[in-house]
Image 1 (cartoon, rainbow, N blue to C red):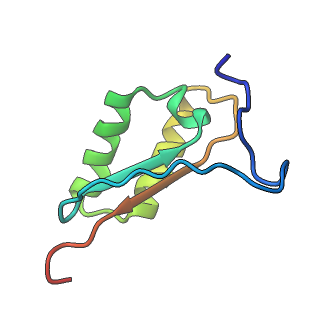
Image 2 (image 1 turned 90 degrees about the horizontal axis):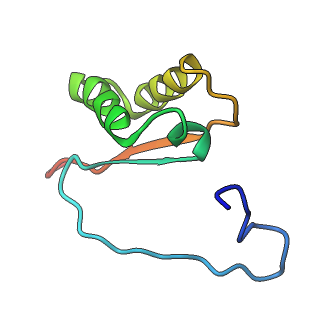
Image 3 (image 1 turned 180 degrees about the vertical axis):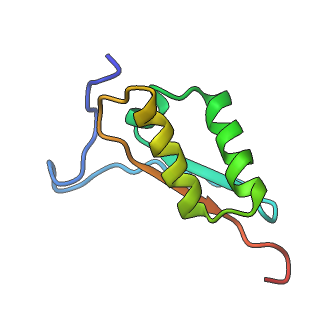
Length: 92
């Protein structure tokens, strides 16, 4: 059932949106992605890729591009979407 769409934008007039609140720390990194990325890449590989890019001073865009490249390299056969964001450091 993982490919069943349970909600979508534009199908109905109103959409129920999930909202989560969490406390973040300076320089936390978040990856939001489609199953086109999380299918070929497991959580450990995504974390390793983020550490190798963001941890080496690369931009969030470069990190997202690297994740997409890795998913394609591993034979990704679905649409791949990835957004990488990082919270600001204190005083930034």
